[in-house]
Image (cartoon, rainbow, N blue to C red; front, top):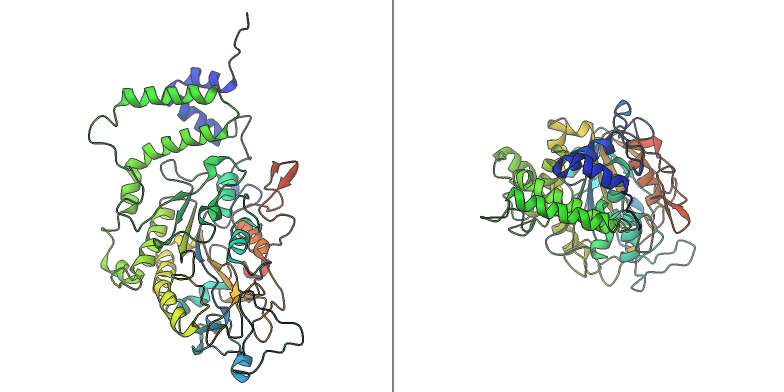
Length: 473
């Protein structure tokens, strides 16, 4: 008669029993005592890094969905002023992805220099401009595509195709959680709609499902559905223990399905979040000074400001990675300014300007900018010539991103575009270099954080990427 041999997990559960087993497994995992632990884990002596000393512990990424026009925001080009209205002739073939190339168009928004660094910023970002000495700019960040979907995948996962893990999932996989009671990776989408690719931009891909993002829609009365326990019966300890035991038995009998484990872990986290998430998401206790800092009482800035303030509260409570989106997918309500730069760019820029400046000011004032990395990015830039009368088409040739906070040398820039901001020129960078730098600041060697998938050692930076030491202290 065949006798069932208990697995390591079953022995652990029999030994620990119930909730005690959860706690024991969690502690053993953190100490690296489980044979199937995915990474060596963060090293306290390396400030939480896994390959070298970390300079950052957590990240807030501000993603501008739709393709921000770089020559109308941060990439000042006097040559466009001089050649305004003339045909574009760079000496090589010119194409536009969705239109016929028009005449060169200067920015309709005046640029002025700001800070000790003298950074040129257009009038659409007056508040953000006050913080430029905190920022390191990537002025020649190129993409391999002019199409929103693949470009968004590339900027979030390092690949043009779906199915690959995003940055937040890689960080969750490599570094684990800083908190037992809140998610490791949180996404705050634009309440007007998900971005291009919908949830594909924050997918764990082939990583274990437990590393997926937790989406919080702050535009709803209940950002986390069913967060609060039912009035009666839902928190009965005996019932919860019975459900846990049933779930564990089901998972143990199907050890090859990581989705079951992920779902059990998600339910356990959801139970713990009932006591912590409501307080983290409650902004009512914030001072009037803080509300003004983020623009919460201005209808133009209240929505993005609420998400930026929530991001600060989440990382303050040890959420590892928070991604805040501006702009929905589709032809409107985003940064995809095909029709009229003069009328389309200012309102969406205004919606994020004060909240972004407020976030940086607030983080700095609380000492959080010392170990929090803030990243501002978009999927690609826009063309220096007109689409129609005053619009601008997609441009994968060059765009702008910036970083601020932990480990960043403020007031510097890396690379530059050509005289028209059409193509990246000196020191061209790609998402691979941005991702490699982010990982480095978090104590990770981007070439060593890998997962074997379909016979290939996959990584966030594929076979590319270099750490941008010039923008780091």
